[in-house]
Length: 426
Image 1 (cartoon, one colour):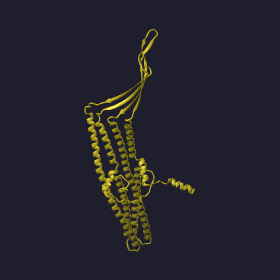
Image 2 (cartoon, one colour):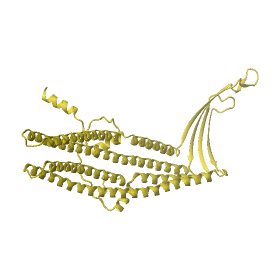
Image 3 (cartoon, one colour):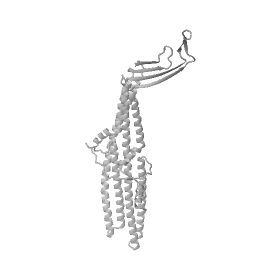
Image 4 (cartoon, rainbow, N blue to C red):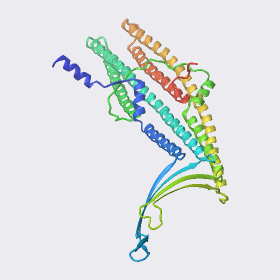
């Protein structure tokens, strides 16, 4: 095969490599929760447009056709007959109406609808904030599973190498049969660990695709994450940052403002209302003495005098709506404070475990290296090498787990404060 064609075919079959930012972008485009929230934003936008339209004139057209059993005529002498009422009449009427917002209620409802639109936008951002946490966590789990597979592969390769050496020594009488059996058992255990690690990687990839709302069988590769979690500042500052950033709280505050405008509109439910209209009418069959064209202007002032307590009840109900949202805001603030403090604590603990895991991995690697040297020099037994190898493999796995636990804890803190960095530039 032509080398160029082979290279192109290989490139076509290579799974795309995603960065974390690209994965988040794909998830935001595909996620069902985000798409549903976007439809709610669009609905709120149209409701705001509807409320705004109530401030402007409206034009209506009306056509009327009437058919009588017979018309009316009048005779004015021989041969002179005049139609008084034709048996058919056709009329066209155009009405231009304009509301005069003398009580300000239409304007209040417009402002309320705009605030509700802003609240729905903040709710959309809250969905995206939650989604970013899910994608980051799934991304880190795939990388974690990949590194655990490499640890298992290295462990299996080392076990097979030592089994091969034991067999050679057994053949020349330098090792006992029990040593060969021990290494065969070690290889079988390492193969089982590798199988488990590969299965874990497969499941992690499927979970990652699900987080991106795409078929779980989609092939991909992930770019490694080199950055370490940032050191966090005082938790109290992060709580303040969360109270400023978290879209759930912003949405509730916008909704509370909207409900205040609605309540004020209800309080003015007994205020007068004024409507102005202009009417033009064309009569196609005016009859005797009738006008073919006519126009008029109408101003209607409505003054509610008594509504049996309907307005009072609506005002009280509106105040309860405000109270419910105010309680929700208090609950959100307390919940955000707890979430941030827990995230800071979890990250601090995870960073401490990561540092310990690094030192244990360094110690285990050095201990394994020295155990092999002592065994080769005849100063150690095979069991010491096996124990050192097991400790080295476990320490490597612990280090991988500790690193991605720290990254996941950092992602939880990012979600808690509603920002990518807990230490924004001033």
